[in-house]
Length: 296
Image (cartoon, rainbow, N blue to C red; front, side, top):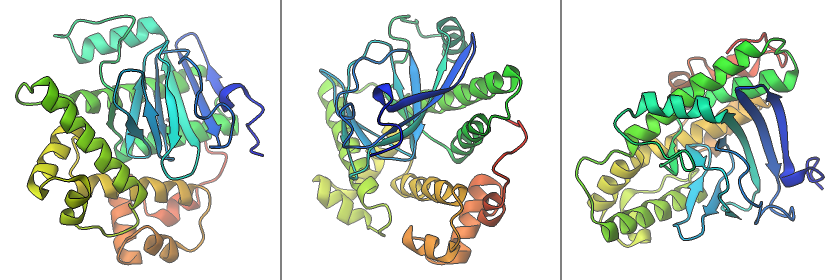
């Protein structure tokens, strides 16, 4: 039995102030609340490593995971399915409604704000910088070294600005799309993301993926980039790197074995990609003290 299964919806708040809340969800697939967690309690974003298919009533299912930020409006009822057999192991971040509304108004000044449904996007890309930022913030709060709320509040604000900006950029198509076409493209992309999530350690070719989803390689590459802001290769690499960061953060010892398990061609390829993504080689982040100074 998982350590958090006794908690309501397996969710734990790490930090709460008048402006922000930060917490973790650690819900194994066998937890009774996993498939049906109940209504979303706040306007919230989720970031995390496990791949989970999320279904909204009347809407298409989407995949959340290490390369994706998911956005939920208060009151939404969702269903969850384990995409890779694991449960929901994610981190969540909340801004007070007034702060969220003002942030969105500044980032998208030409769009009207629906206060009951402020997040118009469902998902957005999770960059290496954003993934590392939320990992450091969660670690600091778990370690109990955040003695003043200012650092945590600014950390969450910076995180929101980054992920909202990225989602808004990715969600701004160049030309209007007919409704049926938009739904078809969305379904194609989500099917592709599921395949990549289940096989991200393998070196799949574009033609193989395209055949699996029933379309041409050109059409898939074009639609995937337009819908997500990523190329397929970049999306898969981001999943590999964020998974690697999780493993390194937890003290993985054999980095060569980790590199090969995640699909990198060599230790040097892995180290170079990791450093380019996170600014430090994996050996340095692995040696970071578990109780760091409160820096965001």
